[in-house]
Image 1 (cartoon, rainbow, N blue to C red):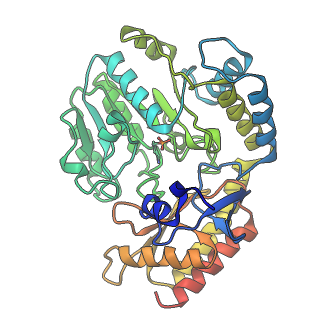
Image 2: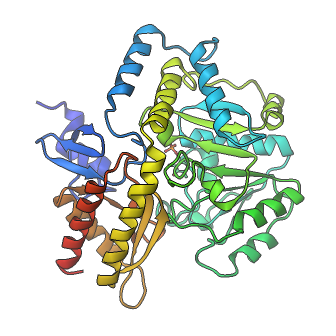
Image 3: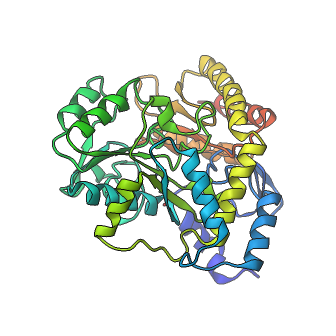
Length: 407
Ligand code: PMP
């Protein structure tokens, strides 16, 4: 018998946000999930399992390290030095200093703190329709009304959201006019939570320049879009041609293991000493560092960034072909294996209920895909980076069948 905490009802309560009848997943393998009845699903949403579910190399490396040593980061051990060095090497100059934490929310929280301490100011500019985490500070700069319908009306006084760049042609001019004397500006450099929408060309360059001219610092939240998923870029900010002052990462870094990081300049990092001595009990533990290095090894050796570009292009072609046949598809957003398929009604309004029903039907057909965006009318597509062309074709066939059934 299953323990009470995992009764069907308890599980439905926890997961009801996502599915009317959530599948009970027991195992994962590459881009697939398998439920307790042995049914396999294609996992099109799991950007956390970047190198695929249950990668044997990760299992082996983590098991070995767990048997050897797993402790807090009070000590010097080889893995923490090596992993920090590798992350710093991946970041552009002059970002050479790494803080290791346990999640994206923690990374954003620490980034905000660094920016505020380094500038001695409080005000943070952020972007409407963004999500940056659940802690008090990362939630404060989260503006997505999909997660919190009152988000825009309830931001604390130190937070100033600028308009969503894809909703208003004057968004950049309005944002520039809002730059007073901020501590800084935080944004995803490729607009992930809004549905995989690229920022307009030159958007970040203009805003970063203005924020810096006024003495502020710029944070790129790469928790979702960084780490090679965009295919042609390892970092989302490369697509905008800018270098941030602070980068936050998580998700893909740990392939599901709790792992996050802040990468910044030594100068900014050292200002932390004004407020204390940075310490995170499990942040940068030996197991976390070995996890992080093994994930990077696999991304590099299996060519997963190139795979994201190649299979992402194929998937985009398939989605565009479907869009040509089905008017409900209003736009295909994204790059590499970070895509958003936007569903609209004939009058152009967001097809929110339809998107939810389509996701339920896709689940019946063996595909895990979920809605995103403030109107929850965008299919978010961010599968493990090991996605194959066959799986992309399977996804497209399931979506074609669902749409043909009446949408
Ligand atoms: N930033 C972004 C852009 C995210 O998408 C998320 C999580 N969806 C976070 C931060 C928070 O990360 P975590 O869930 O690991 O706390």
